Amino acid sequence: MLSAAEFDLATRSARRKGQDIEEVLQSEFQVKLASIGQALGKFFGVPYEPYKGDRIKPMDLLKNLKRDYVEENQWLPIEEGKEGVAILTMDPEQVKSSRIVNNVFPKSKLVFRVTTIQEFKQTLDQFYGAAADYGSVGDLLSGLDEGEEGVSDLTSEDLSAAADNELVKLVNKIIIDAYNQGASDIHIEPRPGKDKTLIRFRKDGSLVNYIEIPSSYRNALVARLKIMCDLDISERRKPQDGKIKFKKFGPIDIELRVATIPSAGGVEDVVMRILAAGEPIPLEKLGVLPKNLERLRSVIEKPYGLFFVCGPTGSGKTTTLHSVLKYLNTTDTKIWTAEDPVEITQKGLRQVQINRKAGLDFATIMRAFLRADPDIIMVGEMRDKETVSIGIEASLTGHLVFATLHTNSAPESITRLLDMGMDPFNFADALLGILAQRLGKRLCGECKEAYTPSSEEMKSLLTEYCEELLNTAPFKKDAKAGYESVYKEWVKNYGDDKGQFKLYRAKGCEKCNGSGYKGRVGLHELMLGTDNAKKLIQEHARVAELVACALEDGMRTLKQDGIEKVLQGITDIKQVRAVCIK
Image 1 (cartoon, rainbow, N blue to C red):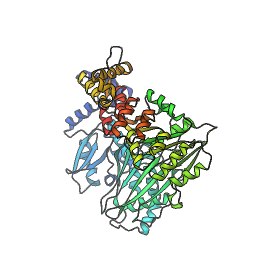
Image 2 (cartoon, rainbow, N blue to C red):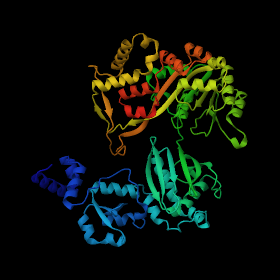
Image 3 (tube, one colour):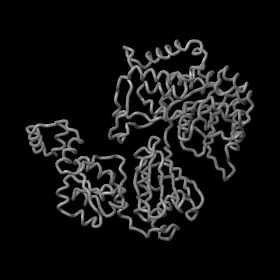
């Protein structure tokens, strides 16, 4: 990649600037880090090990190694595999000849891996954390004393360990890291016997490994979390759930919903959902396509009626409803909400938390709301016949009612509700609309690659887009003309002046941990309660008829909405298919 003369020049430049030759090669000669790494690997005759963002920290190897010592001696154990302990260093020869590593790991076989200075620093920060105040997970773990193994009952030692300063810091650090990395859930998964406890974070809908913790702390760790949310520490055979107000324990003001579940082998799993308190997203920032946004606004501005948002758990239903409520939240409206739990808080809303122990379920609260002079009511979930019938009643007596449902698509929700035994006439009268939604992964804005799709690719997108439309009247009459009109619409909205499209593919960079995706995008399917739809509801029509009718009325299915977002370059078709059933 370089001539000897250029390399000589780089060395002189580095000496003059007091910089590292590696930096000079990168900045002035555009040599990639990977190439430097491979050259080093060839020179030292050991494999080159690049920086990996998702590497699990090897807690048992880092146990007695403090950060200062590692920085001074320039080597770091990264994993223990079949060949032995892998040692990461920038100069394997020197580390081998000093034999320090052999003294630290006397019983282990050692294998060396070479890396660049920059990637060594990154791995160091990854293992020991760059955050200063808590030190790092590695330092905190090396500060914990090794306890006795194999005791599965909660002992007094576990309780004193749960109050131990290092463990308290470790738990806080895990929660702060999860919050800073934008995770939505923290999964703590202990394994029985002497196996380590694995901690994983859910980011953008997928789980990634975070760290492993020695088995001797698993009881203390769970006990500490239970203490934080006032649960019964001695009850280890039943699931429990609670809430942590983290402001009491750490520097950030967040709440976590905690569920403990006894799992096989006498251990307890803990799953924590980070409730991102904060402002609801403004309606226009939800990522709803302009045409859908107009239709959505026209519906929610009606004075009374019933509006549903449906989708599986974690598809952003509550977020969407709160955005709608924020849009409607003015000084002259009274809005009551019943939620389980209250995740997003807004000024001006009166929010009620479900408390089943006290007999406060959705139906009871709904009845109370009707006596409390509401303009708008939002119900977290409509699971049972009673809640739905009160909702319909409320919407027919002049209130605007919003609710969430666990169904797959907008038209399916209608049959689901009718199957609960709703009166089709009242229900048809009350229904304003149903919004189904999913969250797909968004392409990372830093590294996504633009390309011009082939005509085959555009054809397959078009076929996929029009799949559902084939049952509608215009397509039955003349399919070819239908396809053409859809394509013309695409060219108008998403093509350039030559009628060419530009799509993007995932590439992967440091920002997105090499996955190519960062953040999420909502896919929406909005079915309105039009006169045609109402007629079909009263006739108890089949789902297929409802779908065809909704499409004729201008609905786009989740998949169609997703394909338009592919054309906009927000996501790719793989991610759309991953979240849409059909």
